[in-house]
Length: 174
Image (cartoon, rainbow, N blue to C red; front, side, top):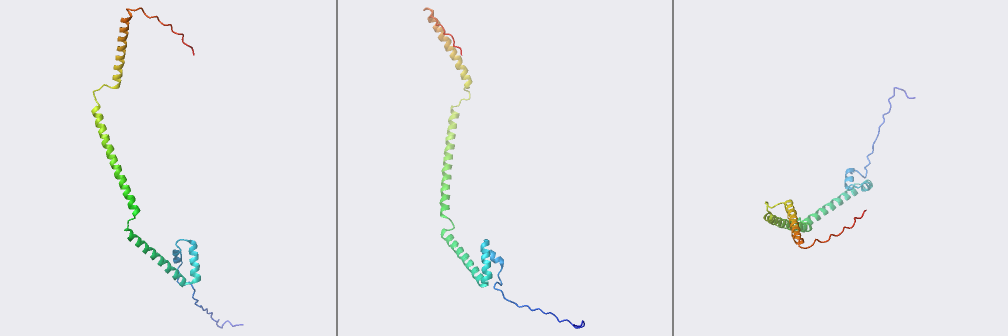
């Protein structure tokens, strides 16, 4: 048995540095390179872990080149179009022509309306009698004509015997 006065041996621990294949790979870069697709993020994560930094750098470089190529194509296309799309320009011209035609038609209708109003004002007499006055006058004249016709008939009837009155048929009951 050891004596209590004897010192205990000290324990030492050693660590061994083992380099991993995925040193320097950031998970945020993997998610960003996936373009928002969760499946693509998992696949890229597996490639980064299994393939190491060289595969990851190759993938990143490939994506950057593809992006630069796409941007150059857009610049070339914009330069060849003169920054104006031919279809948009044609449509704009069609719309402008339609608007001009509608303005012309509206002006024409306004002129016709003004002429019609002028003719109406010329033909309208504010001192003319109203339709109710004309109706009353027509009724009076009609009565007067009937009375004159009856008077004329009465004068003719004095010379001739009165005509025989026709008997009225009895009214039907419903």
